[in-house]
Image 1 (cartoon, rainbow, N blue to C red):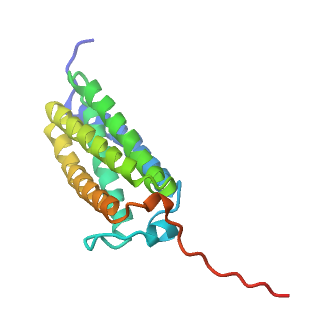
Image 2: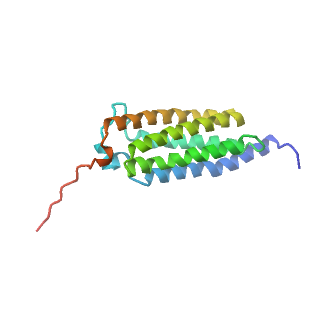
Image 3: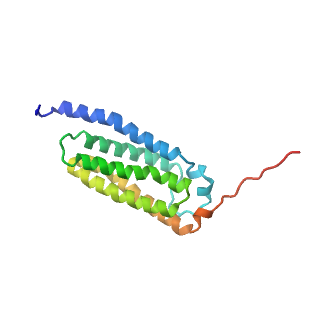
Length: 184
């Protein structure tokens, strides 16, 4: 059947994609964020020197929740665009940048590989920019939803770079441990 879909059918296609993709993006982002202690829950990170423009810890989960919602909806818009020539390429680029995004937290906070994490952020930013460009060819609204993510990645990259500059020995930093008292 080569019939053109009605607006209602197109809307329902988007709703179905969004109902699946948005919670999945949120869940995977949450699991990555909780895979290792981060922020103030991570004694190693607390011991690092950080630039003055480092946001308070509560900003990160709020920002990432909003960003994951936005990019999830962007992906749903593209996936719902049946027949769009760049749809598959956009989905593949999205998956590649998102996989790197999910790897960043365990790499930075878990493995303490801040230099490698900086390279990963650069790769995420490049792939996310390519994703946004391809999304724009499918649906302009999807590309617009990616813009806050690109801005945050650029900021996170600068923050990561500054942490690398301030902590050349970051991999070897051992946070001060608590004291233990033996009762005898």
